[in-house]
Image (cartoon, rainbow, N blue to C red; front, side, top):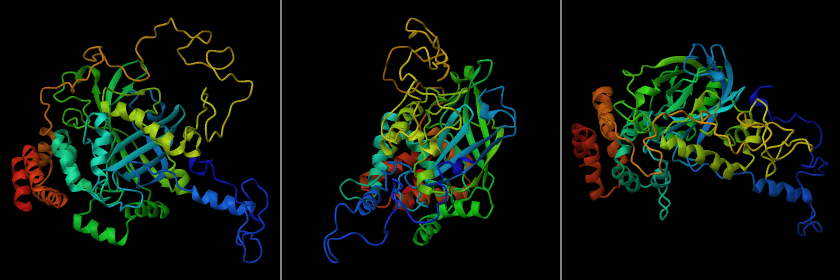
Length: 503
């Protein structure tokens, strides 16, 4: 049975039943006191039907609320075993997966053609557990420290007083957070309005760690290159589409799969030896920075294909729960502060939205055996046999692979936590609040400036300036001056052109 079919009820014929299986007398006529009297409380089917209907919606995601997705497979065509022992990346391996793409700031009913970053979440159902990559369609992000994430999202959402989106809030945050310049340059460029989910690249964005069978560690960045061709909407085209179809990207993905035009993405990585990280020109763990492909070229890994639409959007897409903390052997974290913060925040928001047992839902449940001491709580669907202990250590059930199985092992020092990541230089061992360690060429504006001057052509630079000016609509004169300076710091020509067009 495919992952997309897990949880599918058998098709029943005959009369309907209540949720307890008992027969329903009528789906159309409720019980009243006389022909025109009040409904009665013991019309249990009426009460059950309305009560369930009232609870059909769960809290939407605070971010990435509007999205869509599909099932498929990851195919590994190259040999990268020198870098990682992770089973899903071994040559010839085929792994079932789920992809969800989304906008960031909009609500569930918002147009999916708005200018916004696009989420790129991938769930791999591996034989060693679920592995999630939660990234975007850009290689960088607005901030580098997770403590600022609530503030960033608040500035991009609706104004608490007016209930309206506010350019003033957005630009006020961006211009007071210079590390945002690289991402905002991407956002205001062509990548800010991809022509649907099929025609955009994806990135893991963060720096992760790969570990091979010999225990050697490498820093890694994921790249997902669309085979459909990269394409975008202009502001004018997107506005026209929003008036016709607010679900364009969702519909485009679904209809492509329905007609057998299965979208594919090439999977590639950049690999940095751990020993080279310390001396690299930019801090390799700073989420607002990229690694130059001249320094670390893309290495082919394989491809993935999306070939099956969800059978039930709510059960399989809305309830899909992704988290960077879902790791498998051979893959670990890095000192990236945003990644470490997301490792807590993502499963925590799923516990809020879906309940503490969200991983028992079919779309989130691993395909390999689960042997956990976690038990009970709302939404418990699976449970252990009554003779199985619910505590550790014990003499019956399994233990962690470092545990001795007999005692709490409280006197044993196991050394580095290689299941998380191996990092030889943490720049001190005391708890501290420190800025990111500066590397030789670190600056918040140097990479967006390179993007503008060396990557974009003249036409793309002109579109970028126009997109920025349209996004500034309604901001105050004082803030406009700060925006002009922000873009001048990125590139003097761009700052001058934005001032010229805004005047």
